[in-house]
Length: 257
Image 1 (cartoon, rainbow, N blue to C red):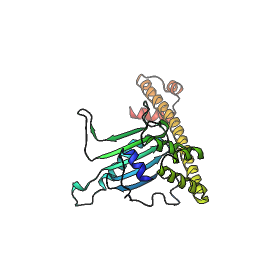
Image 2 (image 1 turned 180 degrees about the horizontal axis):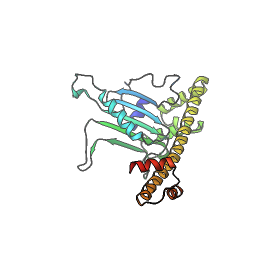
Image 3 (image 1 turned 60 degrees about the horizontal axis):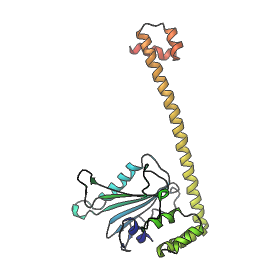
Image 4 (image 1 turned 30 degrees about the vertical axis):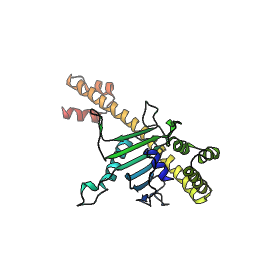
């Protein structure tokens, strides 16, 4: 399944099934994994290290995070004292359940180090692939059915895609097995609840932060006005009424002049 998906993303006719899972504990059932990023890190003979990640929520720091992860994965390709020639391609593949890139309808963006002025790509470097599920379309590529598979919700949708591709047929079998496993279903529900709670916490924090920011801005503006009124020699009682600041704040302003 993974070999077929990687070949579709990387636009290769076929990729070796000799893939090594670098971190077999990524999806282990641990107490602290409820809100962890779901990813699979593998090593491929053709492409070096590949990280496949599922991202549900869109956050402002995702670009930096992917750049950091890809750089770290690239540098981990060699040990201390080894030659740079041993460094291999490092590929990140992110499946997005949302639209991060605004203004186009392209569902697959491939980012690499690139000289835009001379139209030249940096050889054997890092590569970040973003797959935006909502932008999926049937364009005749090997990748578009996989995007439809990730977006499928009904048994009919899965079955129609499974009939098109042996790898998807196998994937559908895995999904049916996991869906029927009570422990796996409870774990999935627990992850989803934790994700919703985290989103709610972020939203609440953002709203509170905005309110605090507005209040801070108003307080700063009041102090600046009071400062100017003091310079003009306006009586303190009138400054207090006009700006709404406290006597203690006004006293500190006088001391700072």
